[in-house]
Image 1 (cartoon, rainbow, N blue to C red):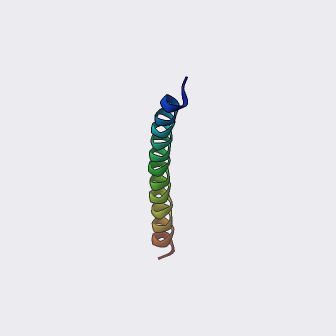
Image 2: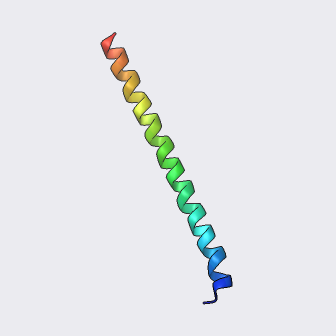
Image 3: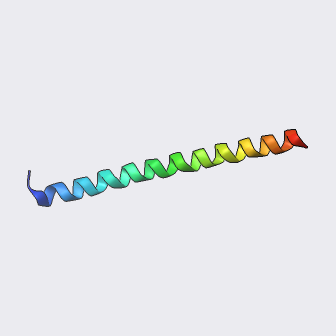
Length: 44
């Protein structure tokens, strides 16, 4: 496969992987925030 065809395919694959990671990180952040809120409510 020529390099000129491989570069756009690799760029799209990287973009999809990064967008999936961003969604996972956002979800983890929401989970941590929920846990902190639950702990704070329990302490009160």
